[in-house]
Image (cartoon, rainbow, N blue to C red; front, side, top):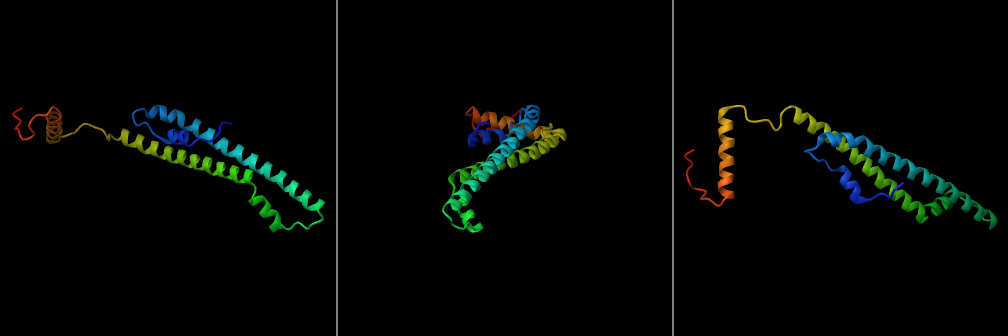
Length: 152
């Protein structure tokens, strides 16, 4: 299992609006990979926690000290390995949540695309306004006088 990487997580959550088909194809695979990473890290943390409980219990037993739940909790809460694994799990869960949001965004983008978000203007007035706006932008881009009247 590869380590969680912030840059990779950000890249995986990003949507390429110009390639929705590929985004839809990759979404379940990336989601599964991240979900499995959460499961593996949780298993690793729980296994480590179990072994730490055994170590602490044995340590207290050998020193003839009474082990209370509070003392055991403090020992586990201060263990850096457990703290790091808990942090990694939280990061991976955040990635899974971001991928769930990405799926919703893909659904909405697809709906907008199907409903003609980028459709051509329907009326002649709209078409003329779009054409005039494009011409104005081209004139400005070419450094022509913005105040010149168009006689097209």
